[in-house]
Length: 313
Image 1: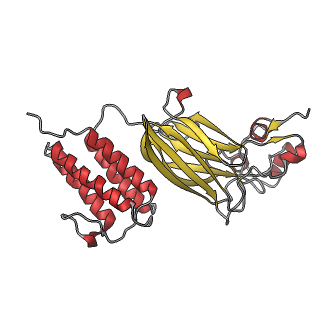
Image 2: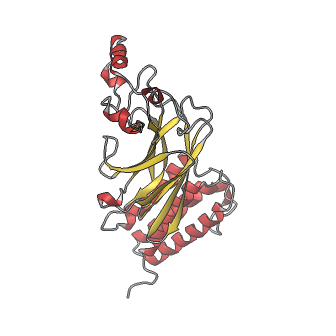
Image 3: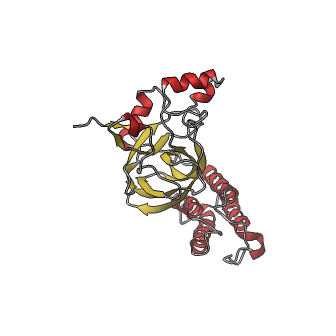
């Protein structure tokens, strides 16, 4: 029986490094697109990702990490039911905070990686069918109680492991260790997507509204919310103000009502917003993508649930 070793483990333990970024060993020569959808589920949400390695990429994709403000249940978080749907051999993992760019408000990353096995060193140095080749995609997801937030993702392209002789050659060519042995979060294709965020306790309505405003503006900047004429506006909105401005104005109105101490009227404004989002969601994705819809709808509903329906006497 042939002894089999995981490529993922071998590359990170036998050679003492996981990622490098030097001549012939870069992991960021690819373009990865993620289409994210969030669906309400029992005790939380289902996060669903279609991850595609673009046809223009120069590398096959070997790993994908999604930053999250939550972590797996094995670390006392709420992320569970992690899956990968593909005809390729991929594995999953959750990790605690691993790197400087993951600040204290973020708890960790969810990872999916090519997990083929090898029976010879020749196979270790050759790309295999389980990598996500250019033009291919995989479907992954998980469940979490965290609300959608804007986070980063990192995708790594496949490259042969760096041997001791390869390392010595790169050093002889003048490459410093800071280039050859770059950490994983610097040697990868980096993009933005949505992933769960566990909300702080105690709850602060003003801060939460500010977060909703920030999500609106970031969604517009990321192309998730189109700056188009608003043909789904309410009576107190103007079509020519556009989709983004009208959503911002609705949130500002809700905030002004909270400042006045009228949470009932603030709740009404947010209910109008949710109905508007449902209308926009049925239009062209150029107007509002599934990412913007999830960010604004589920966070607005979370806030509505925490505002009273009637005035206190």
